[in-house]
Amino acid sequence: MMTIMDRSVLYQINSLEKPQKISGFLKEKGYSRQNLVDLRKDEQAICLNGTYVHMNHMLAEGDVLTVWIRETENSRQIRPVKLPFAIVYEDEDLLVINKPAGMPVHPSRGNPENSLGNALAWYFKEQGVPFVFRCINRLDRDTSGLTIVAKHAVSAAILGQMVRAKAEQGLKAPGIHRTYLALVEGKVVPVSGVIDAPIARQEDRCLRRVVDFKRGDRAVTHYRVLTGWQTGNAQKFRSLVKLQLETGRTHQIRVHMAYLGHPLVGDFLYNPAYGENQIDRRDDENSGERQIFQGKTFSCGKEQYDIGRQALHAWKLSFPHPMTGQPMNFTAPLPPDMQRLIPEEALPSV
Image (cartoon, rainbow, N blue to C red; front, side):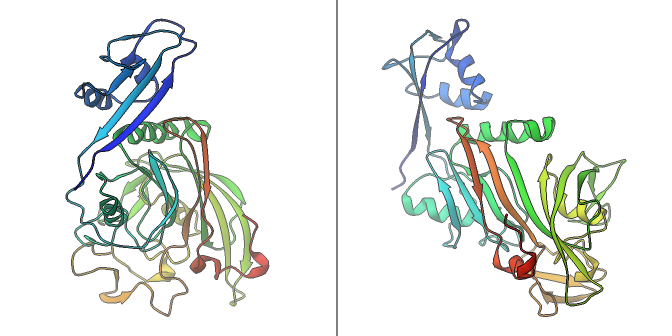
């Protein structure tokens, strides 16, 4: 039998600058308009000094406010499937997950049962807890690394505001900051910089994005080269690059690095060395994990390639906790398929 998700949040009211309604106080804490609407529907959602009150009740110095967040809904369209995934951190409000490469974040027509959403639906079903899938920072299917999943509508709303604030204010915003590691082709010069180039969908392609200064949406990426090395072929050079995002456009790092002339190693969509005249991956029931090159179908892990996906890893994640404000910092080690492409003497201590 499915239980109710029941989360209580306690606020000690101190240093009120002026009289304030509970609704105004919660709005300042980041609760969305919809959050407040939902709380008003529950007569036992707002408790002040041990007594249930309405949202328009005025707060006073020294009050103890308890907010009860209750949910019974489920993401019914997501099928629970037992799949392996790594939880880096979990509390009553969120999870931080180290997503493996090859796992889509959301189910789709072509991937109805192998996504992170399916795995989490199983995880919460086993606990008998309602589950609505609210992934905060989406990763491409073949990008590995850290992602945040909110456990309820309030934490999702506050984390969502952090995402928007960073997109508007840049890296100085007190929001969610993501750092990626990428293996790229060539020797990147200069060794650090900012790529400020708008991104748009390529008009004749389904998935592919391009830098487009007329049609594109603002996209800003900061990068710094950590190390570089020559491969077995003396003509070939590769670099390990650390990247931070101000914005979160689809394929942003992949598009920006290709725009600089340094596409990601293993990128079947933007690196010509990994499939000439390639077309978009087919997202339907018949394609699965396949890629189409010049009319022929190969698996993405074909032996002729040294890695079966774009060499991109969401390495570090920093953000204030949505309910407590406490700083949260997480890292996920470089996965083996990327690490083995870096000579031991070139491995940086990241």
